[in-house]
Image 1: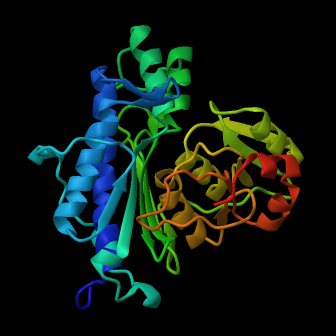
Image 2 (image 1 turned 90 degrees about the vertical axis):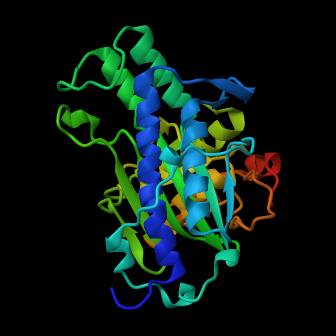
Length: 337
C-alpha cells in the first residue's frame, strides 16, 4: 500500500469488517432462539434483537472511526451507551491496496451519507427461526446438513437475509457492502457460514461471480410477502418466462448479479433508501441500473425522504425494455419523486 488510502477506500474497508461483525450477530441471535420481536407498523414490519444489536454495532463502529460522516439506519433506536463488544475496528487490507477511482479520491467525511439496513429480510428471518425452534430443531446444524423439510424450509428463508451498508456522495450511491450471514449452509459441518460482497462505482464489485441470465429469457424477481394487484400487474406486463418470489432487496440484487434473474420488479412504495443504497452501488459497479418505475434515479442525500415512493426496477442489462413495459395504470398508482 503506497501512501495513505483515500477516505472512501478506508470506509469500505471498515464497512466490510463491520458488516461481517453484524452478520455474526444475526447468526448468534438466531441460534439463541430469543429474537425479541416487536412489530413496528404491522405484522409485515418487524424488528428483532438482531436488527437492534446489528445496527448498534454498525453505526457505533463506523462513527468511532469516521466521526463526521452522516449515518442513517433503518431502526429508530434510543440513544444509549454501546457495549464495547459490539464495536469492530478492523479494516480489510485487500481493499486498502486497491486504487480509488479518481473522482472519489479527495472526498471528505462530511460529504458522505451511509445508509444502513442491519437485517434486510427480517420477516424471513423470523419465519425461519419459528420453523427451527417451534419444531424442536433449535438452531443451525453443527454436525452436517440435516436434509429434513424443516431445515430446507428454514434455510431457504435464511437465504433472503442480508446486512446492507451503502455509501452515497452527491445523492448517488458510490459504494456498497452486502453480507449474507447464512451463505454456505448447504456445505454442512466445518463450512464457514456467510460471505461478504462489495463494490465501488468505477472500480468494480468483488466477492461473487458476475453472471447474466443465459439467452433471451426474462426471469423477474419480485416480492415474496408484499404483493398486491399493482405489483402483480407490473410483473405480468414484463411477459416473464419465470417469476422468482423472494424476500429482501439485497437478496434480489444478488439474484441479478449472479444470473438467476434478469430484472427486479417491485411496483410499490414499500422499499426504503437503506434497502437500495448498497445493492444499487454494487449493481452500478458492474454496469447495471436501478431506478423507480418511471426510469428515474433515486437520490440518497441526508435530507431525502426515506421511502422509494415510485417502486423499484433494477436490471443488469436491457433496462429500457423493462421501463417501457411498465403499464400506465401502474405509473398512475405510484407517485414519482
